[in-house]
Image 1 (cartoon, rainbow, N blue to C red):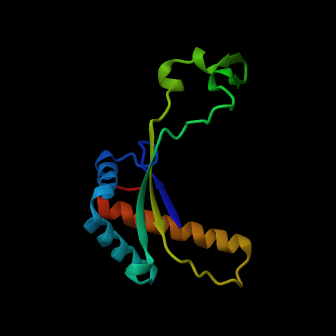
Image 2: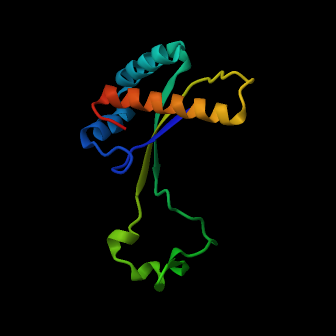
Length: 140
């Protein structure tokens, strides 16, 4: 249902981001958030799962794929440059991708058009994200 990327861009409020990252090791807090979300979504607490996910080295490529240094960046009005020509800060790779997933059944009426279903799903996603952020002391 929802997915919150736990980085400085998507969760700019550092204390809230830290609280979300701590959920990996805090089953009681996750259960509190699941119960609270279940209440606002009209579900049973057992139907809502809050799952932090950590993927190490998300940019890893298996052998035999294109070398990232062989990739050229093309910008308007600037000659093409390879990644090794960019400053380290610009070309840096993220070592771990942290994400918080919210999983719950979604029984939206099938009589809605695909666009109405997308809109309803987006609103539900925004509502659950805002609620989680309010619980951990931040805003989305």
